[in-house]
Image (cartoon, rainbow, N blue to C red):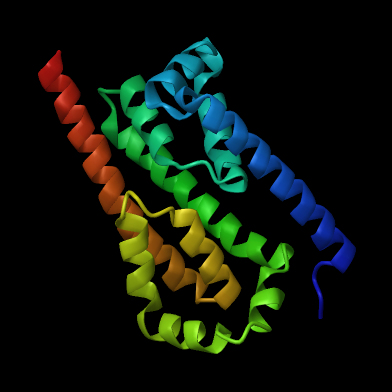
Length: 190
């Protein structure tokens, strides 16, 4: 049974491509917009509403494919004396966005497209054998976009619970290093 009509999938896909391309064009013209210090400065302008806007940026991040690390680092800069708080916010929103991407791949019809591709079976077999450790490693690697592995996991319909557990492991390690390492570095600088 189809959950999404073909016309709805097409509309979502066109809107998504337009949004992602637009955001990345702006980001390539103004790379400072993705700088953690600039994000911190932007968030500070909201005063009392700083936290809701910070949450909103994390919430919208998954749909726009903007990396989460500038937001995590901005959180360290905003709340240097509360690293546990930054970790909690970051990991909850990263896990939420990972699940949204996982399910969004179905809404976009990526699963249908790739199932028809001739290398699907090879990729699926590889992911069944090594997929969860690959997800953890990919999530940990700061140069690899976690969003990409989330799309692949959604397309391949990996077990959602195991998938989230491995994202938590990989992202948890890298976030801990960035948050607590960055916090330690800032304390030594002051």
